[in-house]
Image 1 (cartoon, helix red, strand yellow):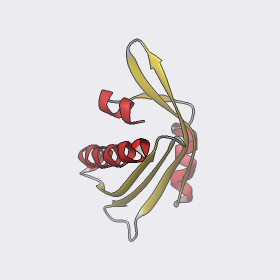
Image 2 (tube, one colour; image 1 turned 90 degrees about the vertical axis):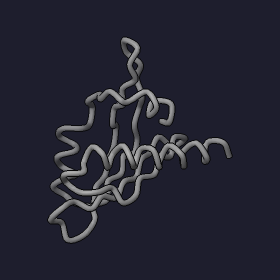
Image 3 (cartoon, one colour; image 1 turned 135 degrees about the vertical axis):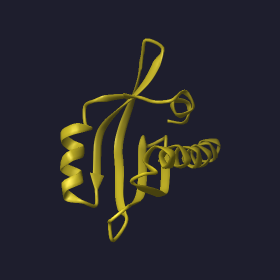
Image 4 (cartoon, one colour; image 1 turned 180 degrees about the vertical axis):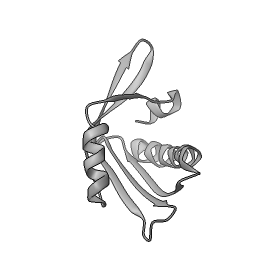
Length: 106
């Protein structure tokens, strides 16, 4: 029960954070974090796109390094084949710093 409530609050905060990051390109319509399964689902409406794009981080792993928390995407899927290919080429296996609040949420 506690994990579900934490994930709900974290998802809302992450959606707001993501919208601040991509505001010039579009808007995040939905963002759901499932910290137990290490999964993140996002639906984004990008400017110029006829329909929303679904992106799922199927599996991620967190790493601690030099006092920072980093996320590594292990598997993902997307409703656009070209974006799926780009994610596999440029996202998988790389580590990205996450804000402190997000580290606690993930």
